[in-house]
Image (tube, rainbow, N blue to C red; front, side, top):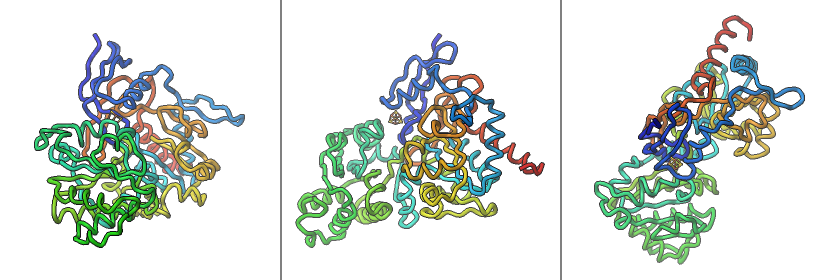
Length: 443
Ligand code: SF4
């Protein structure tokens, strides 16, 4: 009899939806149906039970081809290269569980290398602003139950977080928001007329790269200097700024969700810094919160796990071995790659081959490159060694942190392909082997 599994987690975006229903075949190997999941999530589950999954590690041969090797051989290769490297970098972690992230911290502590996650090319600027200015945030449940004004600034959930609007922000009827969308005012601030802007009450088509000025204008109004505004700021008319600022001030509970439109454009951390300042200003007259639209389902995880372990969320320098150091710009993955400072690269739970700037990939490619990933991707295709692992939320469970830092227990729904390890097991075996080699003086 096929089995229905409820409350399954979707391992794709930062919404970390945990209301997915999966119907699994009698033998526990096939996924027959997935419900309550968006199109992106559906593909993850379909891919998870595909018969083409990689089952054995593959090592690059002198003629450029890849040859299957055993897990033991792959662990040995990785352990020895990590010990030999002076400054190895392990990067990724958006798509694995917290248990894997903790095991990775152990590996890099032993090897004395650099440990970084996808925040470095995503919401890293948000971290910098939060260090400077605090984080007046909330949970998504509070947004659902209380928020009557929603701002999406530089983010497009209709495409990047497809169920965000229906689960948390615009459409759900919450405890104090029983009328759902009807009683919510939605403001989208984006240079493009996106599908998210299409469902908003207000679309402020800010000039690309001029968000900082627009934040300043809103702060002027909230602080009582609206009359001094010029006729237009960042492409937005003064009357519109005054009207929208009035809605913000009169909110019962407002939330600003922000994304790559702010972290990837001119100003970066300063855009977030001033967004936080506006949130603080609004809290003098209303109740306002702010939240980063974190990308992957567990990209908040390494920030939490490594803060507990080392005191820093990303860009960790563990080379001193007895204390950690963090200084984005100096210890961030792309910066180190561009300066050719690292001499081994481990890509795990991400695809740096596809998403790093090409000059950074070229530099990293000069050195041994290991990819730990369930699937073939750009990183695996340019690797010296590709080690397949389980897919979190599909064939292994674990803890993940949603975009609002709420931990969620993801379930395993099917059996992994025979012999395939999960990240935690693999990384702990690499750590064990490194300790053995160091103890024997063989490294
Ligand atoms: S919104 Fe995100 S977490 Fe939810 S089902 Fe879609 S991809 Fe998965």
